[in-house]
Length: 482
Image (cartoon, rainbow, N blue to C red):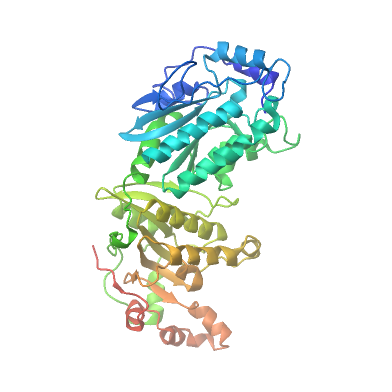
């Protein structure tokens, strides 16, 4: 929430900063922040008396605001004198790497970047313009939350913002958030956390609770960009000198590559097999190949398949699984989404991240590639407490309901339902150095109470080799070598 002390912080920061194009850092003004990441931009926010057709003009309000908060008009007058702004947000039409976008940029020196009724007016107008023109929305956030001098009239602006964000999402338009310092309160819980891709600048304070309202003994790391990344709530912490290029790549990947009719969309091309050629002679031979430490893993396949790529991180529920790689890449000028298992037991956070990726790609009209390689879903007590069953179910549902085509390639171990959850129904291929099994052969021996010496025979009985899978109709084919 803003306060008189928020104004003081703004006054302390009212100094000549570095050139906007040189350092797009957390301490830039709203306009400098736009300039730092844009090729060109035109403001939508009009000064008093402007008749600009796309502008959100400065609207008069009751003396001292809707609550009649004594001294509120004087606070706003001082904020205007200090910043040159009439409100805490500046909106603009900008181009970033040739992609036209609507930009929302907060001015923290104006009452702590807090959201009031006029802020809601400007944000809503900008979102509506994005919808009318079919443009993505980029939010450059620096806010302390809702403006207490406007009470509930300020807090309800979050509903307006959330509604516009939801409409933008339903229209298939990407939303990217950049978390500057600080990003707290309703600004984080609407514009920030609701974005499709969430980036943050190093060291930015990020959290629903601002520094003055959280428990005195709270761990400050939990309220930092780095802490939020570790907890799966943001996708990347981006150094200031890389922010412009990162935003441009994300916009190029997410915009203009989807097709309106997913039924006619060309699926993601099948990757070439990168491992040893030739098919295994026995079931256990297939297992041994798939478990070979030097076998090509997801990183090798992604590097060979894409010209460039950007990755998402985290399940937005407090978890990150480093054994699941998800993101969007460019191949022959076309965007393809990917979810790739990396050979480890997949944790609930990994399944939820994959489901998030598939649903985002489906909404944006982007085909999906999944790479399957796991001994199975993690089955320890922590995985159960984290909701392994529900996470796997959600991944099955995401793939089953996807309207965009999904191409799946088994590149190593295919361990039971934890692997099948990432397999596209009727569009699964396998490499020669892979296997797929209802259960690991060792576990099958144990469950069937067989002698350990029968391990190899059991592996044969399970019919888990690529050629067995093809004969059973489980896969559509075996991927050819490069």
